[in-house]
Each structure stands twice: as structure tokens, then as C-alpha cells.
Length: 488
Image 1 (cartoon, rainbow, N blue to C red):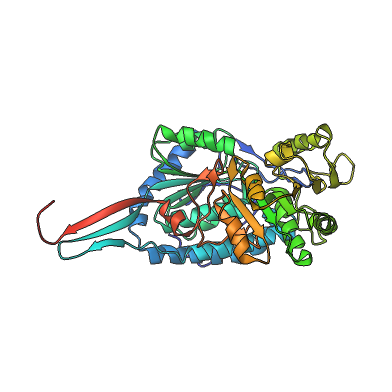
Image 2: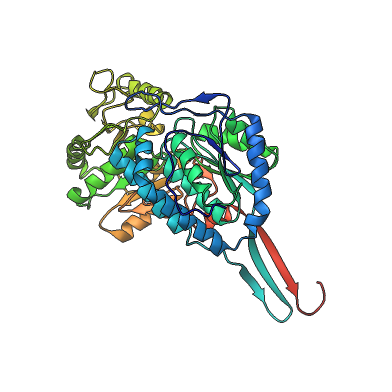
């Protein structure tokens, strides 16, 4: 373990981190800045030999790390968080190049560090389930071994740390596999971690599309924590079956927000609009379907349009306080672009947006104008599919609570949902009927390190965060001590 207290690092060259050593590869690749379309600094393309070396180092590091007291593990996580803040602007600037305006990048770094510090406060204690004259029975939670975090492109900094923190705190060795679209910040984070954690405890591998399958098939990896699309999550789960790896899947969402007729529009509309367009719709728990009561529908829609007109979209080069980014990569840009064709094909009515900015000559890069669709049919693609882009349907809620609950639950997804009302009793009554893993009242996307996060239905399985998420990085073990009496 490094004894240095100098946690400043160089942000020029990028390497895999294997056993706390900076490793180059014969082949490199470069991600693309989605706002300028310029290449980012080159990163390694890992080979299967690199995977084997990282897993071997993690496996060797695990016994000692497992036996390290949790207070010491937590202290090192806090040291790591402080070290990130010592490089705050460098990390934020690099994250901006991966696809965000500076204001949004700084927000993500700050939020991720606070989340990591919150994670370090969690503790898994033995649970006594029986304690009498005859026997003492406890439930223990022991770390799994070598774990892998497969991290998506939309919030690479936050979601990567959101996997690494609990895994390491629980006593596992962790390998960070970043998205090929956003590898640079991950490699620098783990290069920094190598100054703090023992060799093999935290490692990072970047690569092409073959890297994920090598990791999911490796017999010495005990868990894969994956965040990404539902189709890819199914492939991850199938690949892990042959070695019976533990799997946590945080997959797509098609989150509903239900707006009751008693809300204060001036207070609620800006919050709901932000919940729809945060990160240009590229958040698994962005609001993707908005159900507004018919009594306030017209006023709500008009005010939402005015709010969205004030949103500033921009990229890494922005200097005017933009908060909303472009779509992160060409693949996702084409998916959203194809969904935009359904506006004309299905005769939908956009009340704002509906255009690809690059085609209009307004911006270089993967930009769409933020788009709101006025009361599309329930069977339209924009209601049924998760766009993962800056387009949202606003649906008129006609009828009682049963009808809006039916519409909200009419999806194969079930990640998050929210209800907005002054009547908190009514809001909770509605919320309790919704089929989603995270429910919010008068808020949305309100995430915390002590609150478990996971989905229903095809939005995933298992949980990140909170004590439940921490237990997901552990084996459950019973320990019985017989004090007196016979065996049975």
C-alpha cells in the first residue's frame, strides 16, 4: 500500500491498472467527445491475458482484504474520496470530455464523492436470531471474493464508484470495467485508488466488446454487477449461469410520474421537467412517461413547455452554464434518431422540439432539441419504449386512480415511479400500488447511499446501495453454537 500523501495524478496518459501497476497494451483505442466529435486520449485494449492477470491479482489480494477490519476498509474509502476531491477539477474536466457540460460534470463528481462517503458509513453486523440457554444462532455476511463492476456510459463516474464502494467495503476485491464510450475517468480513478488500496484490491481494465464476455465467463470471478440495457443484461445473466456467479442487474426503466390535480404548478412543473430531461433523458430513472390529471393537463403542459425552453444544452466546451448534455455516443444517437421517426409515422404531436439539431445546422455533435409529445396513444412507441434521450410523452389522465395506476403499470419495466400531490395520504395510497423498485412522492431520482436501489420485472434483479445492496456483495452464512442439550 502506498504511504504517500500526495494524491495528485497526471491526466495525460491512460493505462490499465493491474495489481497497482500501470499497464499498457499493444493496441489502443479512443472514445469520442459527443459534443465535438473529437477523439479523447487513447486507452488500452485489454487482452484475455490482461483479464487473467487482473483476476489472479484480485484473487491473491482477497484473503488479506477480507480479514482487514471493516473500520480500516471504510477509512481507506474515505481517504480515496478525499483524494478524488484533491483532483476535483481535473476529474470534472475529463468527465466533461466524455460527454457533459462542465457544470453537469462537476455536479456528478461532487455527488459521487458524497455518495461514496455515505457508503463508507454502512456496517453489516452479525444478526442474532436465537439466543437462549440451549443455543446461540447468528447470521453472518461474508464477502464473495473477486467482483466485477460493468459500468455504463451515462453516469460513469457516479455509477462506477457506486459499485466499487460497496464491493470493497464488504471485503471483496474489485475489477472496474468501464463502458468503451467512457473509459478515461474510470482509469484515472483506479490509478488514484492504487495509491491508497493494497495491490489487487481495486483494478481497472478497458477494452472492446470482447472484454465483458471474458469477465462474465471467468471461473474465478464470483459476482458481476451490471448496469445497462435490459437486452444486454439478459446476455450477462446467461453468460454467468455456467459458473453460477452472483449477478446484480440494474437495467432499463420506463419510469412513470403521476401528477394529481391539486399540485402547485409553479413548484411542481420545474421539478418534473428536470426529472424528464436530466442528462438529456439518459438516466435509467429519468421520468419517461408523464401522466397528468385532465383538470390541469392544459395548464401543466403549457408551463412545462415554457420551463423546457429555458434549459441550456451544451458540451465540454460550454462556458455559459449549460447543464444538459448531448446524447453520449453515436450508437445511442442513432437509436434515439430512429425513435424520432415515429413522431411523423404515428401522427404524434410535438409541442416543443422534434428535431435533430445537427441536421438543422444548429450544433455539431449528438444533439436533439428537447421534445415533448402531447397526449400520445398508450400503445405508441414513445409510451411503450424507453427512449434514453431527450423526448418525453405527456399523457392526459382521464378517470380515477385505478386507471392511472393501470397505465403506469402497463410496462415490462419497473425501476422507479413518482406521485405528485399535496395530499400525501392519497399520494402514498397511489404509490403503494405501483410496480417499481423505487417509489417517490413529490420528488424523483432522489438517490442515497443508505437506500437500496433496484428494479421490478425486466428492470433488473438484486440491489445496489444500502444494507441490502451491501449484502448483495456477500455470502449469507449461519453460525450456531450449541450451549446445552442434544443435537436435535
